[in-house]
Image (tube, rainbow, N blue to C red; front, side, top):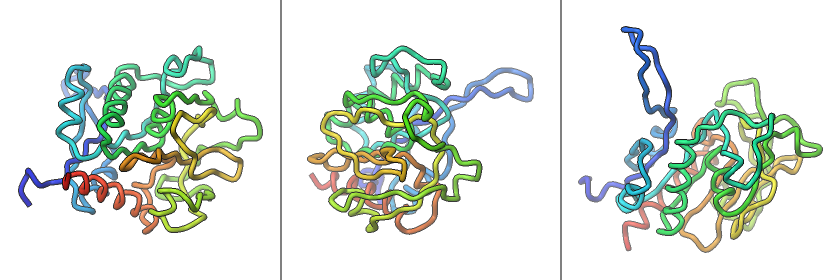
Length: 246
C-alpha cells in the first residue's frame, strides 16, 4: 500500500517531563501503545499529534482520515463549560486541552471520523455545549468509577442502546468495560445522544447522528481484547477508509 492510499489516523498524546541521565528535565510527548496497536491491527497508520498553535489545526485535519482524542490522567478545564474549578477537580493540562478542543471542533466541521476515549469523550461533550460533574461524588447515587485492577480487566457492565452506532459496532445490549475516570457527564451536549449507560445511570457513550462517525466512550476499549471492544476500532478505521473514497 502506498503512502497516499494509507488510512491516516491522528492520535493526541500527553506531555511528560522526564529526568534524563544527565539530570536534565526534558519534555516528551507520550502515548499508551495500545492505541497504535489497535489501529495497525485494522490496517490504519497512526500519527501522534504534538501540541501546536491554532494556525496549524486546519492543515492537520486536512491531512488525516480520522482522529482519536485519547484519554489521560487530567481533567477538562471547567472554564470550557462555564464553571469555576472546584476542589474536587483533578489536574488540568491547559495546553493539551486547548489543542484538543481546537482539533475536535475542526474534525466536526470537516466531518472527520472522530473517536473520543475516556477524557476524549468528556471533551467532545463539552465542546458541544454539555457539562461535567467535576467529581463522581458530586452526582447523586453514583458509584466509584475508578477500578483498582489493571485496565485489561473489566469493572462493570453497560446497557447499550439498540438503536445506536455503538450497538451496530459491538452487536450486544450488554457490554463489560474497564473504568478509570472520576468525572462524568452532567448535561449532554447539543446534537449528541447517549448510547450507553452504567448501572448507576452514568452516561458511558455518546454519539452524533448525521455525521460519518462521531463516538465517545468513557472506557478504554483499546486495552481490552474481546471482539466487541475491537469492533469499536474496526468500525472507526472503516469509516476513515470510507472517507477516502469521496
